[in-house]
Length: 112
Image (cartoon, rainbow, N blue to C red):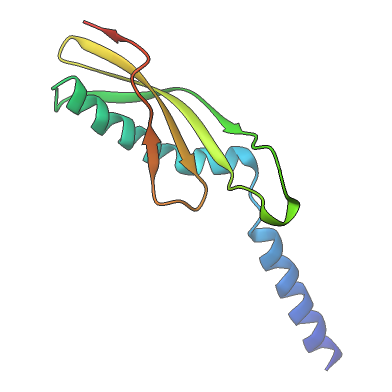
């Protein structure tokens, strides 16, 4: 009986630790969605279906905690460059952990 209890506690502790991710892991996990979002917006705005996207920078946004009981979701911010058809543009993309996707903010610049 004591062995079974120890096994249950060890399993619960392992599951709790497995659920913890570092901020860098969270940012890396959402990067593919961020690149896809920026690429689609860039392809539309540049009128270039063959546009390619690449991450220029990425970081975790530190949200202020207004109420410890209701902390906001963690968000990752990416600067993504999109280029194609002789044009290029950069986008600020924000993804919320556990969210349904990312948002690509307006183009910071367009070079034609």
